[in-house]
Amino acid sequence: MRYQLELFFTALGFFTRIPVPGWVPFSSERLNHSARYFPLVGIIVGLVAAAVFWFARQWLPSSLSVILSMAATVRLTGAFHEDGFADTCDGLGGGWEKTQVLEIMKDSRIGSYGTVGIVLMLLAKAAALVEIAAHGAQEAIVAMIAAHALSRFASTSLIHTLPYVREDATSKSKPLARQLSSMELAIAALGGLAPMLLLGWVEALGVAVAVLIVTWWAARMFARRLGGYTGDCLGAAQQGTELATYLGILIAWNSI
Image 1 (tube, rainbow, N blue to C red):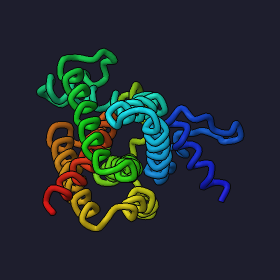
Image 2: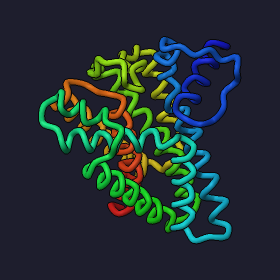
Image 3: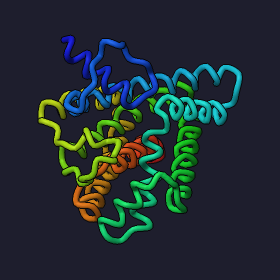
Image 4: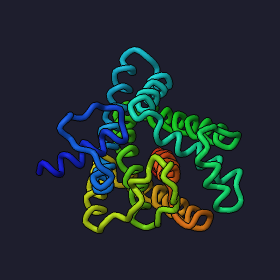
């Protein structure tokens, strides 16, 4: 049990700015195995997002409450996934050959594709959440928790299905260059899918379809363009499937 707790804190410390106990050891091997708890970290991020939204909503309109909620999650995670999404947009948008794409993605500077991509992504997520919040604060809170957990499971599933393609030691996600075991994937699935129980069956179905489509498309694109995934690709997949969760809920409502 202590080892599992150490793995959870390893994941929490890697993907958020939340301090972890000093007795938790860190190693690449532990980070590898901590992937099973990435969706659980997503639940925590989602709970923070929901709490900020709820608190702000007591005095502010939904639109500003959503923006403050998103800002809180960006601060909490250090824009970890947003950075990966921007780098992926730059690489896939500006590069042709695999080596060129990887070189662009490694560059810490953001380019035109990354700038436009992350601005549109943030605007789309904000607009979708505002639309969901128009149906009630509770609906927005549930959507946030489900989206942050499920998107991290979708991203984690790529570690199980695709090979890691960056061979140099400069990647911040080099320790994740391995495939998850079936047991680890099952644990990740439990954490990622559990919040969907908070949704109605229609919303859950819409979310499942939307997230599956985006995950499949991302995996296919990464395999075709790169032959596998990088850490930036995982961040891009998380952002894409988080948005897909919100869109799935809205599509489900509009189809009733």
